[in-house]
Amino acid sequence: MNENARSRRDRHQYGPVRSALEHAGFLAIVAPLGWMPLWLNSAIGAAIGALFGATQRWLGSKYHRSAQRNLEIAFPEKPPAERDAILRAMWRNWGRMITEVAKLPRLSQQRVLSIVRMDPESRYREIAERAKEHGALILTAHFGTFELLLNAVGAAGTPVSIIHRTLHNPHVDAWLSRVRERFGSRQLRRGDAAREVLRELHAGRIVAIPFDQTAPRASRVFTPFFGVHAATNTGLARLALASRAPVYPVVLVREGTSSRHRAVYGPEIPLVRSDDRERDVAENTRRFNEVLEAIIRDRPDHWIWMYRRWKAQPDGSISPYLDESPPLETYRAAARAVAVRT
Image (tube, rainbow, N blue to C red; front, side):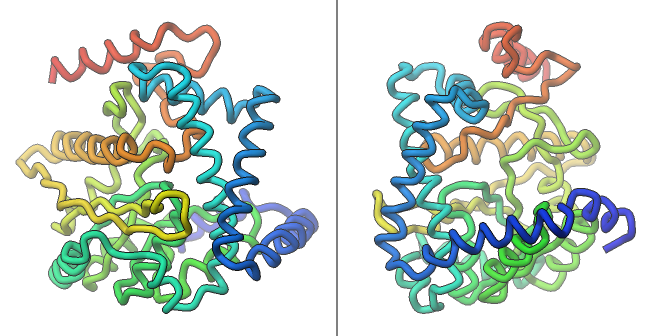
């Protein structure tokens, strides 16, 4: 890691006293959850999530308000009661995800494979085979029990590398790193990530890139996501074009309310390649958002709706999360107007 990246990481880490106290509290919660049977762990998680969601609703917290606004943006056609049902289901799944992650260090390779199946297995094999040429890129998101997906593909014999944002608490960060790397998967720290990803791809490895968060100014384009402009990271498109690695969408989907899951592998996303690199980057990024949107529409309770995904808007336009923001149709019309011009 270069010095600038290391100094940026260190500035955002907590001090030793706060880190130690938080770590002690973290372990006091994680340890008992890790010893529980998985079915009980998941049931307790759902109850915790439901209680937390109800508390946020009662408090009118920023998380609740942001989630409500996001669901209005994404599903304007749905009545408020239906959007509210999605939000309640999301909180239950969020709770399950948190407690299941606590259980991961105690799940054996065989146990992981018994609760996660590859769907379809033929495409899982296809990606592994394609990766031998130029590597392979996985478009994924903070969707379902995301950390279990990393464990599952590693346990199945195709470990991946993933770009990781260092957590504020170094002890919790180290714990999460151990969980993610149990079955051969690797973490690439932000800072030198682009060079590291290309090395991984040239070595024939699979690299997973979470694609559902706002991008910094230097590496973003504004492209529609649920019909409203979202600041979207161009890194995945640039890496795909530079490496010629294929891009596949992969997420983990829960089977009902059980503790069993499917690693769902979508078809390869066709890329645009022309003599205009920046236009190709923008168009491929738009396609990636389109694929991710379809995944979320299929299982909206699996995505984390409290994240302010549409906070940044092009040309300095006002954020849709502010009280003084214009009607949402204004943002949709702006996105449609750009689409017509291009």
